[in-house]
Figure 1 (cartoon, rainbow, N blue to C red):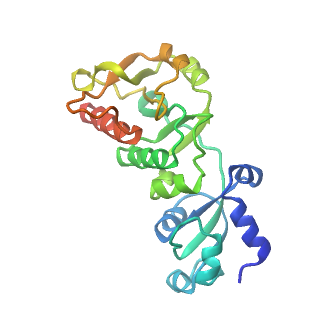
Figure 2 (tube, one colour):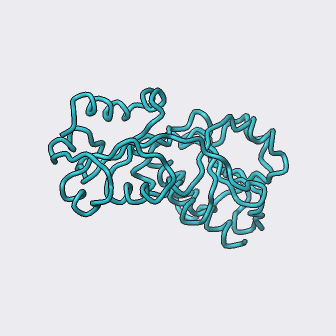
Amino acid sequence: MISANQKKYVNSLKQKKFRTQYNSFIVEGVKMVEELLQSDYEIESIFATPTWIDNNSTIDCGEVSGKELDQISSLKTPNEVVAIVKQKEAQLFEINSSLTIALDIIQDPGNLGTIIRTADWFGIKNIVCSDDSVDVYNPKVMQATMGSFFRVNIVYTNLADFFSKNTDLTIYGALMDGNNIYDEKFNSKGSVLLMGNESKGISDELIPFITEKISIPKYGKAESLNVATATAILCAECKRIV
């Protein structure tokens, strides 16, 4: 059984202010919790159905019914398990010798989650988000990462300050008027791929920090590309040239 207070606590973590207050977040679903158990994140508690418990007999958790799981789940179709996890401070990893993704005011949870998953696919360890980007601990972001969250370092900061302090980095800015990416020779060592907001693009204050303006050539009539799709294309090209 899960108590009324426990239900209230879990449900409060669906809101950013309470995730910040308690320094905790929600992970749910069989796949996500499997990834969690292989990570170094500290687990507060796990609530699971009898089926999940039977398959994971060595894991300490509280048993809940399908109805109780439905009352604390963020999913439209609740899965078998929900975990409450402590947040931890991420550290950037060897940014001077690798490719980093920087995200300027990315607001859609699905886009951020997909970009994290893309970074994991291409072996990119670091993502730097502007302070006003969507919270990575948002349950919709977490689900969209499909577990990749646990293998990518994600930090939030003022991007202008970050670029000012890391002047040795090559900043590739994705812009509509940038150079054709297929004509560029990327330097993926000590470089940053800067992606802008879904509707407004890269903020004006960040343009001066861009070393190379790049663009994906357009062959059809679509007005723009989804930022997560564009990030995947650019990452593929960066890695192809390595």
